[in-house]
Image (cartoon, rainbow, N blue to C red; front, side, top):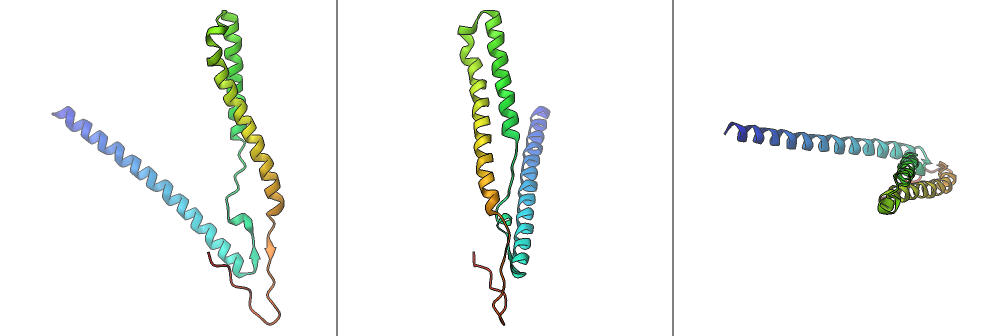
Length: 141
């Protein structure tokens, strides 16, 4: 009976910890979005429209690093299997990480090319009010 109680308590604790962690992550994300929305609204009120505030810009190089890592693992497996003389039996196991790495590098390259085109269009725009009028109202979302 003691073992059942211990298992029940540990299960409840791990479930509770998971729920708390998920709630903390969701809370942090919504707080960050609320801050960005407030900043965007303040800038619109002052007559500046900045499209960079509408979407997050994360230009990560993580896929490139992981791609190089997987290609290195694939090459090491190819060399190791060749040296051991069992290349034909293990070629699939060596080529899988090699192609995963190649795919990650291609993905990184495509994302970087798309980000370069976006960066040229992401300049703030100043909206001047008409003579004798107030600044234009922000668009309704």
